[in-house]
Image (cartoon, rainbow, N blue to C red; front, side, top):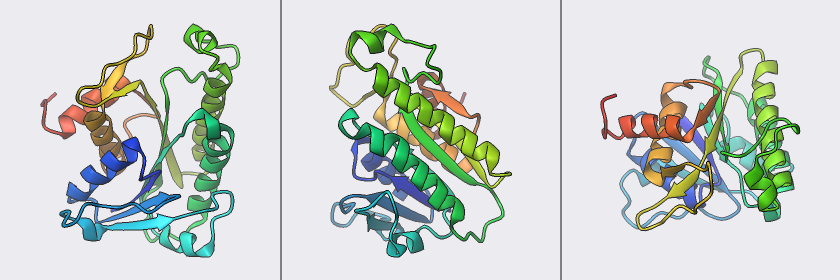
Length: 227
């Protein structure tokens, strides 16, 4: 299986790469980012990773497109608000359209997983109080609109693309404490990464996953539970 990780040098992207290298079902990993995806020396499975640096996510150069041939699944991450409008919506849309046009030998649909946020409303009539209290309403709406875009693209693809939204809560690492935000769930970095890889490799359980779904899937994939 060939997996594309968009944002492979980021917080979650680094953990996705680490776990993907250990997964025997994943034979090829494309780490797509604005800077090189660097692995520690002598990392097991390092030969599976192809680091692809892209400086123009509005219009992929041919050298980048070539590396996207035969991709089976993609995990795409959103980024901070300082770059949200272009990266969250525009670059997500471009990645979908580009991957959808790439030649693929496989008959199965391309799996596209978009990482969003727990409080991203898909309708303007929905207004989570926590967003308005923190001046994040427009950022939340933008991510919600991007979720709709990703799901609608799959519907219009005539079966060529399957999409999924991962609505994550606060992502925890050892020693990190979740902020006291009412209604905001938390999830371990290890668990969410394992869950996203499981969905990319084994198939999409449903079109939207929340933190509790990803905790369940991730812990099962890691062997923490048999349920």
